[in-house]
Image 1 (tube, rainbow, N blue to C red):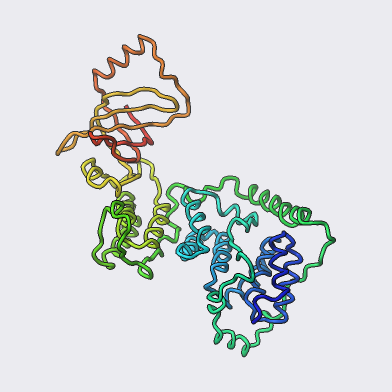
Image 2 (cartoon, rainbow, N blue to C red):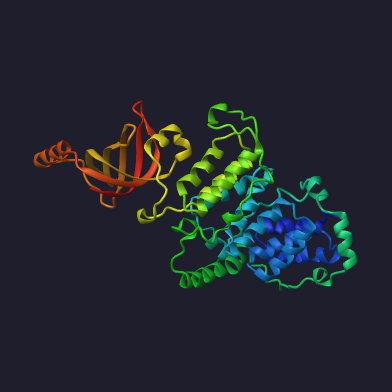
Length: 414
């Protein structure tokens, strides 16, 4: 197999320069000459991806995938096609498989964007393939390891089968005039992106992506597993470890417990198990998988909240309860308007003890801290009366030596 032929080098450079028609023609010519050349099929697929020719792109990707399914470059393309099918979980699994590899830097970035709710579906629909792929540094620099991953026996089977559909290209692209990179980029990328984006916008005026409330029932988190790669490690930074697993079985059991709790709408308990894994001696991939899983935990309305957690538990292991939801009643010690919100100090009591709680409720209006004397008197009277309040919000951590609980409020009733 000739992985560094002049034609492929030309195709690779054409892709780098935005000459996608030319790149396809060059790659496709190598497909006809050497049907088992992985890079010929791969570069042809890349060129078609940039041209947003989905059906032929899938055809060439399928053949490249058959020849070398373990290549990180193919993994990125598979994840890209999963997004077309609204299958974020499969895309996340593909990216997670790359995070320990040299080419995994983009996978880590895409996983983080998915967690933050970046609309990856929309970008994929618009054909923005460059957002989702990593290309080799050079054709000459492709490692021997990558070449050796191709199964010679599997290629022999393909030859025996003599599957003509793969040996004959299904798309011929007529070469345009020599109008330059920017004209071709505009003609073949920007116009399709605008048209697809317009159609998609009209069809789906509001796309909520993964941060849509209560949208876990159809998510494939139910198929999440860590047993394939779960492992315990000796961490370099001991101070970051808050929990030590003594067996792999216990680690896997906690991950499964999180799935069970989420199925039962016990969102706080699911978060507890996942965050305990994240702060444990679990391996990097398992932690990353747990972080992905966290992004699927919804934020229920207070009417649907059924998983209480009490102050003493939060203070025991605050890291494991980060962003857990609480619904508490307490006495108002202080309340004041600040820019874009209200600051509230509360005293929460339970059977064991009293707990100081600071909370912030974000509001749309920007209000000044300045008060008239009459307003000051009203605030003083309010403080002396210590009215009752009910708060619903997220636990964000513990403050100071007094170990005040800090909440980010969603609802405040007084």
